[in-house]
Length: 77
Image (cartoon, rainbow, N blue to C red; front, top):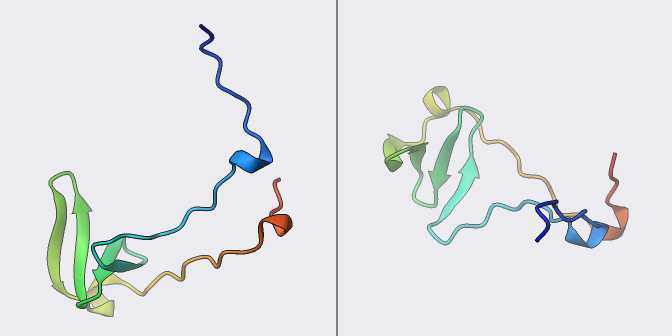
């Protein structure tokens, strides 16, 4: 049995997307997540903790998520 990792091909590459059934749809520059109700959550070893209503002065501004592009235009450095 070989322990060598399999060489990745172009078909193996995946684009990261942020999808979650819990309604957490936004990420802030300070590492908070904002759910559909406007609550700011922080990820801790104990799980997601609610830090109250989202306030940009406390939790930071939203980080725009990358737009999904066509795979044919994917460039690998």
